[in-house]
Length: 95
Image (cartoon, rainbow, N blue to C red; front, top):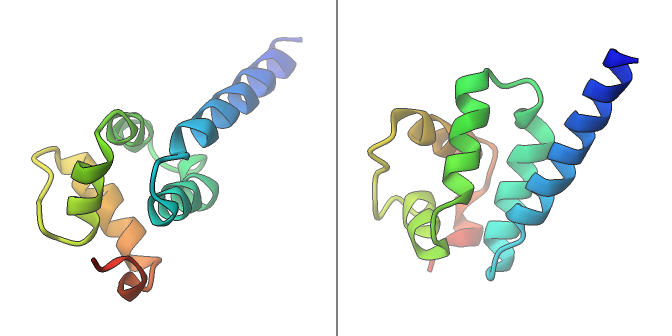
């Protein structure tokens, strides 16, 4: 029963994170949700925590990181940004 509860908790957490990936900008939605689907579950706990911290940031800050106008002070967030960018054709998000 504990295993089933853990799976349900994980599924609920992923659903909540999917909702939080929905931003005011379609490009951010796609990039953040893409990371969630492709990398979040297999990421180390520190990177999962960093992804949650990234989602707490305002859209313009995240966008600035993704177009390399800004650099995150948080090393783990920088690692997530690099992973997102390595998976992405960044020409699609240039302003």
